[in-house]
Image (tube, rainbow, N blue to C red; front, side, top):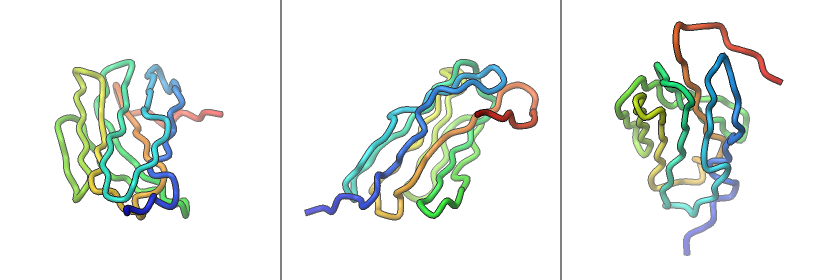
Length: 121
């Protein structure tokens, strides 16, 4: 019997936030997978993104950039990221999940000219 991942895999920030004119909605809000299962996380944007970055924060708090992807598809091991700017969406697919995949996954998008990060409370 497959063991349930010991912490919630892919606990996601699903808040809709607005930073410099772009709304980003990430779904699902949270998910829990059995070890070996696969899942996809989606980000939808209110405007056309110039680029998307996918991040992972492990339970120890370490932040890791997984992908920088202006458009198209990139794969790194069991992770696959796709960005389709014309459809204002990006996805991160995790295949054959492991307990070490437990953590927080989120996307960040850039549109227009590069700007300093905006602060939010």
